[in-house]
Image (cartoon, rainbow, N blue to C red; front, top):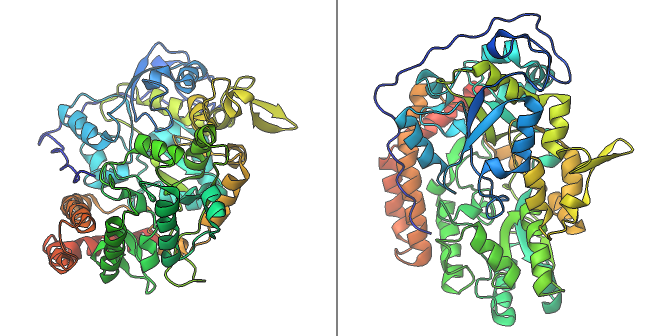
Length: 543
């Protein structure tokens, strides 16, 4: 992987805030279709589709399952139907793949903003409160209260989620993506070629030592040029971020809560040196992808379906489900299986693993401070939380992408057995938002069908067996002042971590350089970053 690029300078020093008039509220109410007050141009809101000739601008990433299938969001059937159902016309802009942060910074600095921006606003320099203060996005409290009866009702009924989706000051800042069931929160982990394991008489590895033996056998006996391969862009060794392999050493790639309930930063811990030593050894032995620095989703797809790789870190749907059809087309024996998050001592429970909170940072949509039609944008986004919108976002259009069978929304063969041989992951993403994210509440009935293969269903159970709940940081929100300070500190720290990690793994720096690296981390104000995270966690716990 190329060393992480320095982020572009974010903002112009002076921000001109535009003012806009909110339509007066009349006869507020709620219902399955979101009946309530106000509407475009002063007309009373009577339900969807709304009566408006307004076209709103929408900025958002083209998800990985759509890349190579559709050129723009405007070409996606889901977005075309969303406009019809809500009565709101949309024009779309998408940032280049894996460059959403850089593209957002350029757009914000230009001052030419769309009406809505789909982005993880927890990552904004200064945090959501700063983005509101800067005038880039709106504080949504009044909009939700007046124009969003569906989201308002959901948050009232789910106070544990309500606590997550606002700042310490109580500001709602984006329409959230919410995982509606615990079964939806785990979807990623280690994956291996089961047919290779069976052929070689090997068991599914559970420890680091067993993984070494399996990868060595894949290389020597199956001719795998890249036995273990995982995503490495836009950041170095990004694939291990959720705890695979690194978690065996009792740490994570970012901030976490240790066994003493203290916030720690994994790459500054002594155990990180042990993790780097392992990766360095495996790389030198040819067990890691030699292109570890540049592996993107397309390269990983090719590696896993061609036999270049026999193991990875991936998703149940967009991994096992995506690769199996292509792999079987080349080798009928092709079969993938999930492995537990590895540990050092056999029988131990992994401390870390992938598990999203109910409020998942991806897919949240903010209304910009320059939008001339915030009430229409709010109504549009509230649709996803209505009963009708819930079915549409999760299952698409009845009669096209799903049909009701005994009260159960069942995906049609268009999605699950596509006539053009596209995998379900790619077709579901065209007609719904269920298998990635967005402004809606995800339905577990989606995952019951999306994970069509038995090995997919079993993978969730395997990956869920961790103690991550004890160690995972909740979605904390530092104050604007803390967040701005934190962004500067962590930009420098993360760049140092990524660059140094890669150099040590590739052998460009000796392992002993780790001690110098730790001193550099401290010189970049790591202690202050830890102080900020700990204070934010304390405030979150008091919400």
